[in-house]
Image (cartoon, rainbow over all chains, first blue to last red; front, top):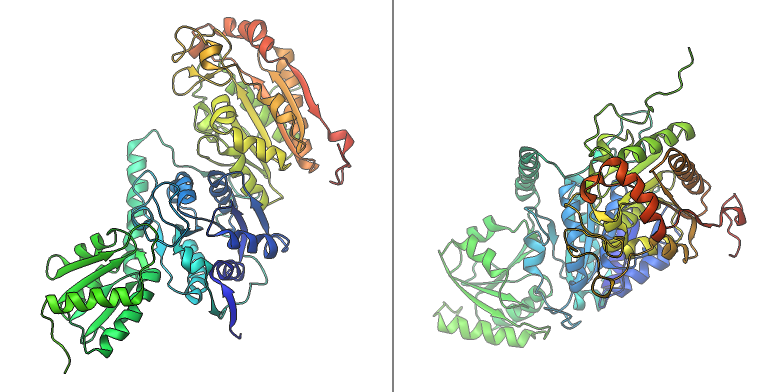
Length: 358
Length: 257
């Protein structure tokens, strides 16, 4: 299929439809409205599909829970304050081992914050987010093409591991236009999970529940969740590395921050600075092993985030004190420029006395 | 000899955990009788809430899935939208449906979701130990209104059925009680009608059932039956509240109200 020019938010919608998403439930919030509108236009009248503009984010995620019970691929999207409201439902989805895709086209916070791009929802996304001891898979795209690709992957992962999957984008990704190629056609038949709750015809009735009066039952549920999480950590961790082979300094960044960093790194290389980049694509599971490996190859890490330092905690866990780590962050939705990051890289490079290519 | 009374097929062989005199067991029994009589056991999916009736899935032999507190109508919406052949009902208490789940309930009704809500009104939060509910009567003592519900401070009992009846998507709303054989019979008829409304795809249906809670009311079962009759029905009059099912074409086409 040829490439077409599309908004990030619309590309998510199109990719979801092509992944066999049958139900979308949303609630308006900037900067993700184009996705809700795309689904209203393109999914709501599709055969067998359903679109509801819910009365709240809380209702929307609970509709996703209902649709997931019925065994279909279901999705909701929102932006940071709305994602906070969805945490109740995400916790229930995780507990009941139900697949779902939740898109967070995040904005600056806390509170109502601002609608411009920020990465301040890293903790909320990667640490469960709601009550209880659980995780969600978190995918962090950095281009419109990747928004489309990871949306498709999100549905597959959700079904494979019966887990809610979060796509953590931001206002910049959602609102920008880029060429995108869709690698899948919509399935001719919408997928239905075999364990769907569809009435006890020809089989004993089923119960989907988490509440138990037996503490040992709860413990077993949590053990089973964590056995699966271990498997996901082993199998599904993904990342991008860029010019790290000979790098004295490795910049660690995710999402759009990684894109900004890449521009800066190209210019630093032109100036003879041996700089590379590491970009986690799965924020949970975080690629600890690969970062740990990089400590053998590089002298210094610079973590760059559009927040005041959240992913840096995972980088520190991976580096285990073997290398020094610096941090540069911009909080509050102000988008840093590549030349700004180049200045940070250059200053740090000389301060630390790293080797310059002659 | 003719058998006149038997355990409904849709009722599991399990002993109820409910307190003596509690209305839940009666309503469970009625629900399962209706499932059997309408032959819908294998189409029904129930959404029980947190509360005493969270364990309804131990008794009702149909597919069931727990919802978060108050979110029954939203979960039911998602389920029904994803699989319209199912007959979806929520089983909710007064705190669940009329406090935390007010928005979900009103909007599901307004969209005319073809789901059924069985709304148990016992004027208190049961499982948490008898706190004030939105439906607690004026001057009624509960653990959080120890001096009696003062309407100037704690507001008035919420008449949820009347509120829901105002939205156009609500097709059938009736308030009944399970405090006498006659009322129990009427309740069963109402439950049956509610499911028929859903089968006929006519919109949202709800049966509000005034149900005794002797434990939290600190009454004997008999006293609690009398209290439903003498006190609760004054605030929550029994009877049909809304029925537009006859003005709508049975094929699903809706006339203007």
